[in-house]
Length: 117
Image: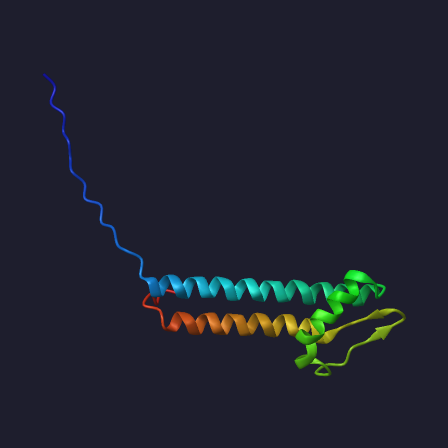
C-alpha cells in the first residue's frame, strides 16, 4: 500500500487597516484629479500653440482652464507669433499641480503605518 503524506499549511490572513485603505484611495483620487488638470492644461497649451479657432469645444476648454492658469499668469513671459501663442502659464500650471499632488500624497503617507513608501 502506498502512503500519502498530507501536510497541513497554515495561511495567515491579516485584515486590511481601514485607515490605510482610506489613505490609498485619497491618494488615487488626488492623482486622478492631477492627471485630469494636466490633460486639460496640455490641451489648452496645444490649442493655443497651434492657433485653434475660438469655437465650441476650444472656447469651452479655454473658459474652464482660465481658472486653473490664473495663479500662474505673468510669471514667465509668453511669446506670440502670428496666431500661435506659447502659453507658459499652462506649462507652469501642469508642473505646479503635479508638484502639489505629489506633496499632498506624501503628506498622507506620513500618517500611514506603512512607512515603506
